[in-house]
Image (cartoon, rainbow, N blue to C red; front, side, top):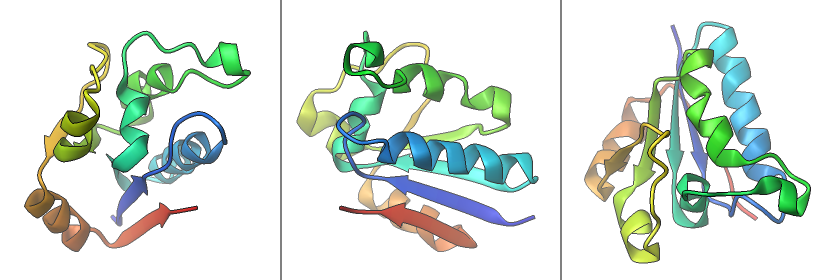
Length: 119
C-alpha cells in the first residue's frame, strides 16, 4: 500500500486550492492508499472554529476535515508553529495532531508520494 502525504499550505478561502487537495486525498484513500494530510502556513485556518464557507460561496472546510475519518483518512496533521503563531482555535470536531518541524520532516521522509502545492 502506498503512503500518500498531501501538504496544504494555502488559505482555505479565496481559492478552491485547499478543497481540491482534500478531494484528491479522499480519492487516494478510496483506492486503498494510506493518506496523511499536513496543514501548514495559511492552511491551518481550515481548523478554525465557527467557519462559514457559505458566506464566501464555498464549502466550510472545517466540516470537510471533520468528515475525513468517514473516508478512511485518520491522519490529519498540522504544523504546530503555524497554529500557534496565528492563534488558531482548533474546532473540537476535528481530530488533528500538531507536529514540530522535525516530526514534519520525518513524515515527509516516510511517505511514498508527497503532493503539495504553492501559489
